[in-house]
Length: 410
Image (cartoon, rainbow, N blue to C red):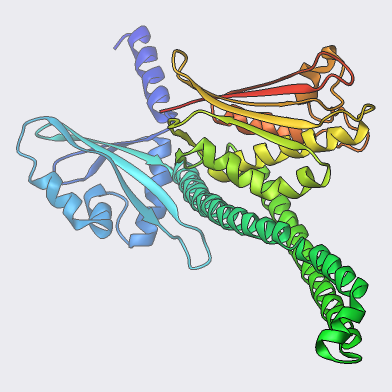
């Protein structure tokens, strides 16, 4: 062999010896004929662990998996792959962590077998970390989905309860008490006639009884009103808490939507806000088209939008500088050519400068002196999540405002 060929051969052996995978050449019986450095590094602890001679690879492998050796011996073709990336593990001692290896076996000829050994401990651990992360993410997603479902169901229940509480609160303004006052005044002015018809002193006795009855009813009405007011405030507080929780989980999981009636949404919100509208002597004008199509959405969140809009409109009259007839007009109709429902709120309250219209939907922006600027911002977030549009306009101070919502329908 000349010097050049000898040099090339030497370089090839060095290259094989330094290869970052274990390379083993054996005969059919498994006797090792050639072993590179990395192969020796892997096989040495395996031979010690199995108490097998390092000179025969099949003897070592038989300790870990006899089936693998049978697969080698039963391979009939004269050449070809016997197995690829077969994995097995080793724990050197009770206190040591598991080591993972893979082996690929190729039959080169009837008398030459190639074994490729890899230490895949780092890879397996990364895979396990990834699997743990996937499982943790799946568990977190399951918890999140359960939380969203719970918030949705509780929100619907609280909204329904709030509607009934609002109705109860409004029904406790007993006008019969004022009628009873009028009746008492009538009897008091005819006390002598009562004495003549029922006997001396009877008229006064009837008056005392009716006054006591009226005072008792007034006291009970006051207690009922206070109780209903506390219920209403507590329900509103629960709704606020639910809104905060929804804010944290929104967009992390797709909200479950259902076909709902926008007419029902508006009616429920009106029942809840009837008190603040009545208190300010505002006339409510409703212009609803019959047989409106349903939309796909979240009933509870859309009620929150309408409640906030009604509240803003009603409170806008607190700053109005003219005592004219007050009204809030609600229009609900289908824009069939566009496939949209239009929900519009118009009032003749204080209004605002026209250039402020687009800014009112930004977080922290408000036209009210005591406002937080979160109301219309949250409304826009909810309408956007329903693939709708919301806009507001005004011709100027003391000229009222108009708010429009467009939502696609099925």
